[in-house]
Image 1: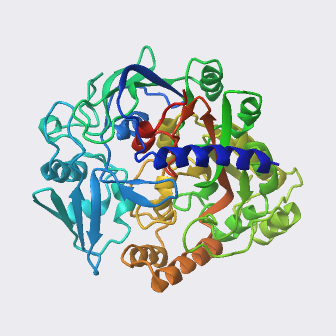
Image 2: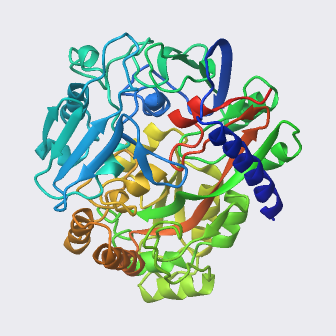
Length: 529
C-alpha cells in the first residue's frame, strides 16, 4: 500500500544526503541572518518554563543539547560529548567534550557545566534517574568522569534526556520547575532560544554567534504551535510553515493523502521505536491485578482494525513479547490476535460471567463489571472502549487530550486500563526495552509503574548491569517471555514513522528519537536553490 511512496521518498533523501556529505560537510558555509525556517507543531507550550513545561523542554533540547543524542539509526552519537568510554565493570563512564559547543553569551562551556547539570538534575528535577544521586562526578580539563555505585550499561538512555545548561545562569535558580522566563535562554549549540511568546504561540531560535561548528544556513528557526494537528498541517500546506514536527510522533498518518497531492512535499517512511499499548492498573484495581483478566483482554482487542483506523495502516500488529521487531535482541513470540469468543470464554473461566443476562458481566463480588479506560488518543480510545463492551464489560471512558491531565489521572490510579504510547526515549530509558514504563521503582510522567514483582525488578536490574553480548541477549529474551506470560501491558501495534520532506529544502536528517527537530538537521538543511 505504501511501498512505492516509501522508496521514491527514500531515494530523494538518500540522494540529498549523498550530495551533502560528498561536499565535505553537512552544513551551509555561512549563515543567512535573514533566512527563517518555520516549523509547525501541535505541541503547545502553556508556560515559558524550561524545566517545568514538557513541550518547551523537548523543543529547546536543540539549543542546550545533552552529552549524547540518537542518530538516524537509533544509535547513540556525540552531542556535547564528542566521545566516551565505559569501564569493563560498567561503573566508570568518561566523556570528552566537543569544543564546538560554546555558550551564546560568550562564556566557555566547561566540564564544570556538565557536572553541575547532572547534579542539578539529581537535586532539583523530580524525574531524574536514580543512579545520579549515588554517582560521583569529577572533572579533568575537558573530561567528565561519572563514577557509579553500581554498574550501569544503559546510561546513555538516560543521558539523552538531561540537557547541559550553563552553571553561571542556573545555579542561582532554586526551583527550576517553577521558573518562568520568556527568554532569551543561553544555548551552546548552533542555536539558542531567543524568545518564547505564549500569546503568539511562537518559540524563536536564533543562530548562536559563539558556536564553533559548521554554520547553519538559517539565521532564525521559528516553531509555531497550533491547537490541533490539522491546524498545524494546514499551516504547512498553506506555506505559513516549511515543515511539521511533533515530539515522539509520526506525521499524522490519516493526513498523508494531503501530502500525496502536494507538489512541494514528499514523505519518508522508516521503522520506528515507537509503539502503542494498553496497560493495566495492577496496584489498586481488582481486575487489573488479575492475570486471568489481563490475558482474556488480549483476545478482546481487534489489532488489525486498530492498525488500519488508528494508525491508517502505518504500523504492524504486535506480539505478546511486547518490544518492537526493530529493537536489538528482539525475540519472536506469539502474535497478539483478536478472537472475541476466546476472550469471552476466558472471562467466563476467570469468574467474570453475565449472570443476570443483561449483557454486562458481573465481577467476583456479583456487581456489574465496570472498568475505567484512560486514554489520550480519542480514535484508539473509542475503538478499545467498543471492544471491551463487546466482551461484556461496562466501560467508564476518560479521555484526557492534555498530557498533564492524563498524568494526574494516572498518578491517582484513576483507571483500570490505560491506552498509552512508548516514545523512542522511553524505549531506551532506565534498563531499556520499555522496562521503565512498568517497573515500580522508576519515576517519570508517562510511566505506569505497575509492576512491583521482585522477579521483574531483579530482571531489570540485571539488564541494567550487563554489557552487550550473549548474556544480555538471554536476559532480553527472558524479559520478552515475562511480558508474554504476565501481560502488564498489551502491545497493540509497532509504528512506522512518516516524515514530510519539503522538496524545496535539502539536507534533511531524521533522528530515530526526535525526528527533524535535532541539532544535526538544523545545521544540515538549506534551500535547494
